[in-house]
Length: 431
Image 1 (spheres, rainbow, N blue to C red):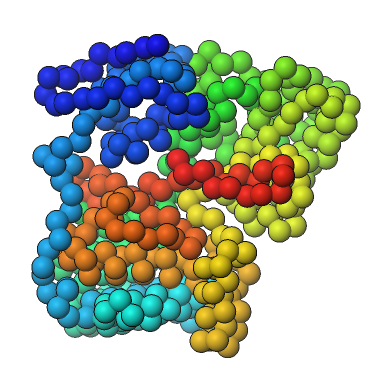
Image 2 (spheres, one colour):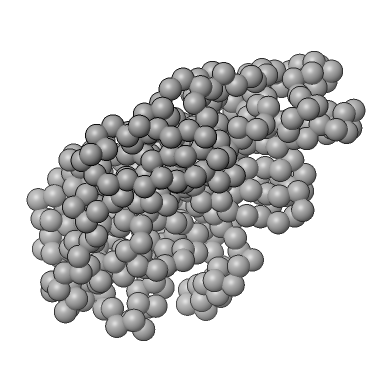
C-alpha cells in the first residue's frame, strides 16, 4: 500500500481513498469533482516513471470546498421569465449531404424544444442557412442575431474567426456541435466545444488505455497506411507503456501468419491496436486473428479501436463481439433503446421520413444538445457552465460534461469506452 505526500496539503483538507479493482486515476478524480491534474498534484508519485495505480493503494484526495469549486448558483435572471432566444447558424439546405445532415440536426433541436414546453420552458428559435461559401457577416448584421442568448454553430471551422468574437462582444453563449478546430476556445469564455479534434485526445486516450489494459499484453499492428492519422496515437500508447516499463509487441499486417501469431502472449490476455482506422485494414486483421486463435486456442484477444469504426458496427457486429472490441468514443448510438426508438418514431411522425442512417444520428445529437443547454439556461440563467451534476439528464446519444479552460471557454470531457462483449452485449464504460 502506498500513501503519497500531498504537496501543499496544509492549504486544504484531504481524505484518503483505498483503490478498488478496476479504478483509474481519471475515474477517481472525476468521481470526486477533481481534474486529473489536481489529483496528480496531491499525489506526486503518480508522475513517477513507470507508476501504475494498483488495487489496495491508498491515495490522497483533496476535499473540494465551495471556495475551490463553487457550484453554479441558481440565478433568477430574465432567462427564467421569458423565452430563451436561440440562434442556429448551420448549412440548412437540401443541396448536398452536409446540408441534409444539418437539417436533421436542426429538426432534433426542434423536437427538444417541443419536449421542453411540457417543462414550462419557452424558446424562440431563429435559424439561418450558413453554407460553406456563405457570408456570415450578413447574417450577424441582423438584429435578431445580437439578441440571442445562445447560438448553435458553425459547421465550418473557418466561420469561427467571425462568429467567436461576435458572441463575445454580445455576451452570447456559442455551442459548437461540430467545429473541432477552434483555437478561440482557449481565450473566449463564451465558447462550448462539444467535439475536439481526435489528435488532441491522443495523450489522454493513450493514458486511459494504459490504465484500463494494465493486465494485458499490447500488440501494436503496423498497417502501412501512408495517409493514417493514427500513428500519433500508437506513438502515444508506446510512450505510456515505456513509462510503465510495460512490455509490448510490434507486428505488421503484412507479416506471415506464423510471424503475426508470435506477437501474442499465451499467458496474458492480448489487446490489439492498429495504427490505421481504415475499414479494409481492420477486416484483414479480423482474418489474421481468426488464424491466430484457431492455431492457439488458449490465446485471448481484445481489440482497441477508433470511433470511425462505429460506421462498421452493423456489418461487422459478429467480429466486434468475437474479438471483444473496445472503442473510445464521445457518443454512442443504440437504436434498440426505448428512448432512441421513441425519438425515431417522433421524427418519422413529425417530418414524414426516417432519420439518415449515419453515425452519429444527427437528430439525436440535436435533441441531446438542445435539451441540455436550454434546460441548463432556464435553471441557472447566464451562470450555466455545463459542468457535471448541474441537473439530472440521461443523454440519448451524446453525454455532455464540460470543464472550464482557465482564461477561456469550455470543452466537453465526457468520454467512454463502448465495449462489444463476447456474450453479445454492449456496455458503455464512462471514463
